[in-house]
Image 1: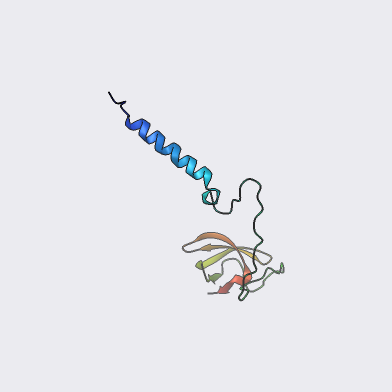
Image 2: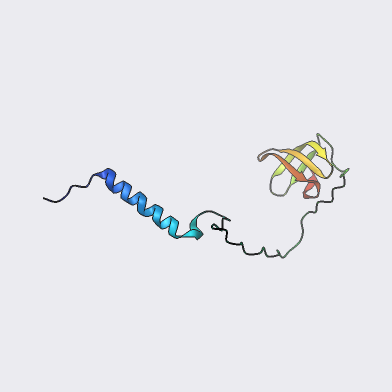
Length: 106
């Protein structure tokens, strides 16, 4: 008489085979993880225009309560100013710290 296989044994065998396949394919692990102490490839320089720079100097164009616009996050209100970094409450993206050169008065 043939040996009977339970559904639990089948699902466990599938899980173990998937786990073994994942362990054998290190590139499929996670984003940016080289694993095993391997070195990462050096970052390449991006071509194109620089959108903003961090100068460290205070930007006097912005003050708390002012309405601003960011190309990715949209419109928002300045909550606090710390040098050239502004804490902004964006309408749809929440609160973020943004460098002043990435913002424009709305």
